[in-house]
Every structure is written in structure tokens, then in C-alpha cells.
Image (cartoon, rainbow, N blue to C red; front, side, top):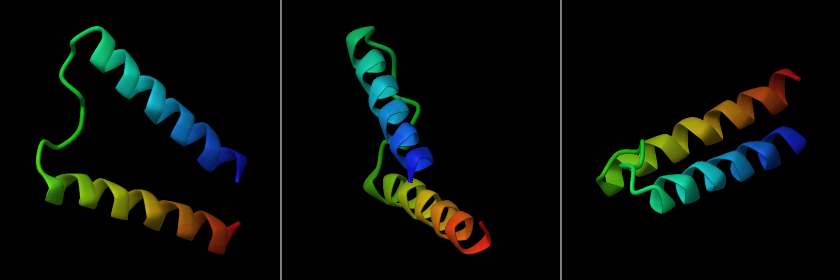
Length: 52
């Protein structure tokens, strides 16, 4: 659970830094790409929980 929380905080910090420094966000610009990233993250967390 701590790992997921740290990951979310890091993602938020990167998003804030990209916006503040006017750097393009390192994420897909379309909704389908963003959903793919969410699905991969959910799969990673589910596998971590099942295997660990």
C-alpha cells in the first residue's frame, strides 16, 4: 500500500513540475492512451499484491 501511495505522490509531483516549468507532460495526449497507462498500473499493482 505504501508503494502505491509513493507512486501516486511521485506522479502528482511530476505533473505539477511539468505544468509549472511548462514542459510537455510525459503521457499520451489522448484518452485511450491515458486509460492504457491506468490499466498497466492497475495490472502491476494487482500482480504485486497476488505475488507478494
